Picture 1 (cartoon, rainbow, N blue to C red):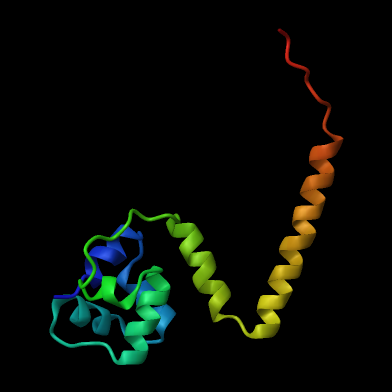
Picture 2 (picture 1 turned 120 degrees about the vertical axis):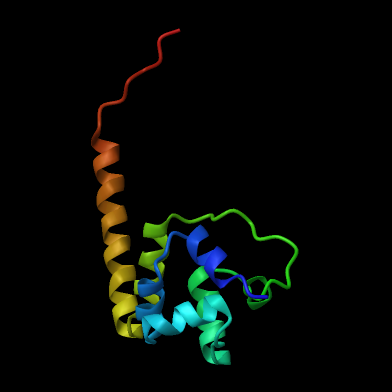
Length: 117
């Protein structure tokens, strides 16, 4: 028995989003979830990566699936990032670093409030 649907829903993802992320048609995801067909090994690994679980967990071979540690928005960001070329990923890393530096500078410039005790 597979746990595709259970894990997909736990992660807050739609069948359409999964299909687009893997480059397959939406009915394929439905068929995988209902056991009418099965994903290729490459798609099985891609599903596990997208859901951030092991293939064993995806196939129901693991004892327990941990509660999601990422929000659906965070999962989408990771999925979008992974879909980028190496050059695109490097660009995003640079942008995030620069944004972090700006945030640190702005935070340092804020007036400090001393605790009264």
